[in-house]
Image (cartoon, rainbow, N blue to C red; front, side):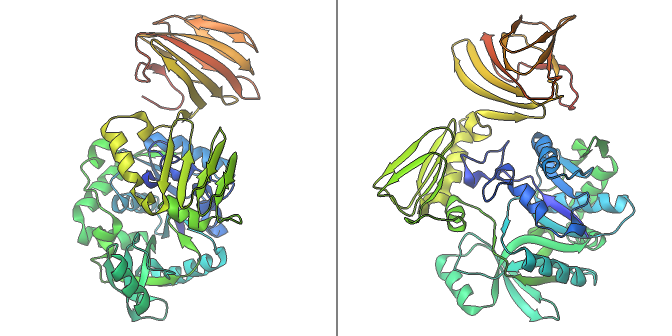
Length: 466
């Protein structure tokens, strides 16, 4: 079996914690691990070697770093030049596996789901493998526990020795229809997890969605290896139709099988669902961070760097980050996406970025900004180096707080230690590196007529950024 993890989602319904450039799969929501790490750690050992991870360009180093933290290295991180939904993403992995001379049984998982019962999950996986080896396309249908309106459903057809033929896929129902589905016992939640041979999936894709098949085949043929990343040919791939595996293949094929899964599954699609999954205190509150509650009940509260105090409230979701506070009734938590869409339409940075931004070399936090100035706290990982760059519109002052900085300015190279500083004039070519064994922390003060991130002219970069 070959693991394929789809990690390109934006997780917009968990804003403001999840954002386009730092979505929920990289966040510790249910444990000390990120959701991507938990996805990796819950699979059987024979599935954990060199998984395919499908993600976008902007999150590729987050993926690599998350894998490294759990001692996993994979040369199979496929970079989609742009998101085209799950059918093309899975096709890229299938084509690449066959290109390498193999035809594995692919186990396709989302990077941001919760599965609490690992033993039951493993049993279902190995049952699915047996069915997939007989050239069937297997999906998992979660045994419903309540009339959920946020999931699609799968209707069970004829019983088989393992699982059922798929009778039909149905879209998210109304409350009344969901009640009927639950009472009938004939419907399962659509989990979005699949098991099939790479060749069988591609054969069905070629028959049912030939344009996706053709373009993905060409894009992989023209792909290139860059470190652990497989770079897909952009000019070819951007012509690919955008479609889910359900619409492109599973709803049309006559070879689909659904296996019932009862393993504590959730797609953690909203703050209210995260509340239901989490441990609660004696007042049925879920609390993270520095929080004081008084006469507060049935409320989800997640803090960051400051105290949150609640008094006389109930049934709320309160999520505080460094640059945004979201307060919602639990019944409205599914509508957070409306806020995200408004932020996007107004081109506000809170749509895609946190105040603290992760980079392949470390991170920076925009502490303060005003007319013609900006202050950042920069952390550079041991051995890491920022790009050789220059700016047309701003000068920079760097003050080292801790660690050692190796700085090049023009043709000059200097070493700075704690409490030492330097100045980079407008237009001067410069670079920053941490040659030490501990993180380098420094304060950067920018001044000038324009301070946007797009005023970075990269001349050389070890991370392959433009």
